[in-house]
Image (tube, rainbow, N blue to C red; front, side, top):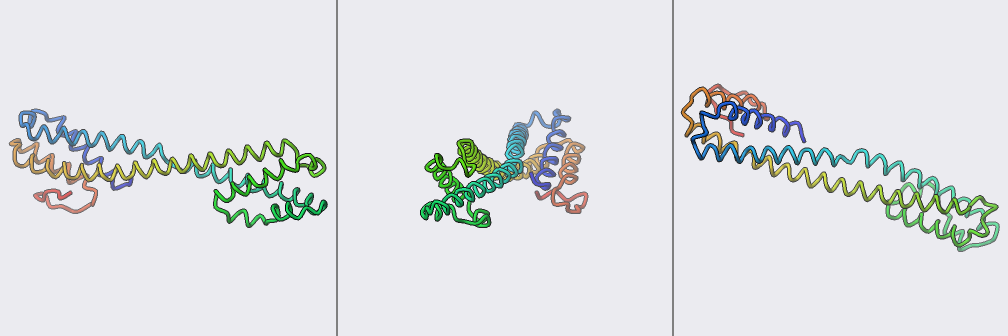
Length: 226
């Protein structure tokens, strides 16, 4: 959550705590009870959505995918260099064209293009494997490259999924906070219009002012607008 959202949630919880500690002042008033119940449901949903948002933090996934990409790029380039030597010595122009690229060219590829290029190098290794022993390209090389391709593709997919989940949770939180604001504005009117306990009413509006996320300086008699 944003700091402003966290502040607003603290205010809503302070208001609800005030209701819970002074049930006798309002429980007999059905419209107020309904308003409190609605706000409690929204606050519970906000807490759950905030937890989901935090669990969908992509930072760790981003670092892992970047490490995997760097390792794949290095391995692909080193393998391509060995294939390039083989292609030049055997005058295999088709293979030479396939493996002739710079490391910087790999750096600038989109991830899908990098994976495609990696699979092309993998196929070239498999196709010429019986002739590559002297060039230190073996079945272990093929297996390692395949594993790196699979791992990198998987980590990028996981990271994209987590980012989508976080965006969904963030959008859901925005809707829930908008809902909470409407419910609190309604509670303002309900408390002022139906609750006859002056001390309860005063403390309620103090809770609304103290935790006001906009940080406005409000006069004692001024009611909150949020």
